[in-house]
Image (cartoon, rainbow, N blue to C red; front, top):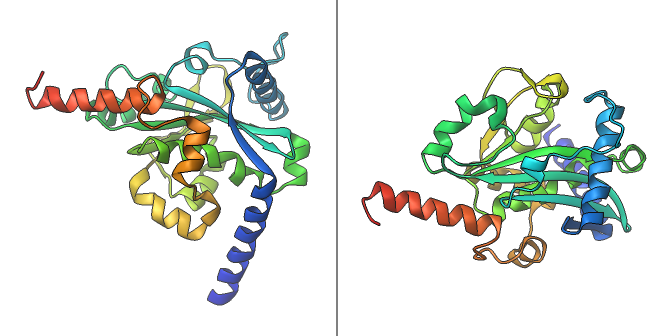
Length: 250
């Protein structure tokens, strides 16, 4: 039985690794790239009855989409936009993270302790692409995973519907940090899931090798790690400042 499970898992990983040859991950930077993602989000959320219909047909969060410590990532297969996930990075009391809106009680202690949190939200995929590529949930979340590694995040957080808990627990070792709660402008209740990113990385990549990436690939997607104006640079600078402050150094 054990050998059969390993073989099945290996075939699954091999299939995704082959599909990755047709995949391109991007960070949306131009207005047209962002607009396409806002509309993709809306289509996915309406299809799943997560939000009320809107006249503009787009799902845009100015506070979180425009925050300098965020990336709006997109996934393309054969040049077609098929999925997206947003990554917001935060450290300290002034962090701007979507999950803080309703889960501040469980997240704030980590932020005050100087830990960096990578918050994954607004995950969405095209219906027809999901049907053609059943592996899409894994591929769509890969740039978020890469962002957390690129910035050396201490914790990763996601706030899905409760029925998605099994997926995130199985794949990423997430555990529940809260009970299900109502989230503004989202129909179903959501649950806050978190994980120690440093602790999960080796286990996840051993089981799912397609989550591995090189520093060259990550820098091509997100930019140099040391760039002060980039999310990683900003969160690391804040972390250094907090450490110096606690040590009484100015």
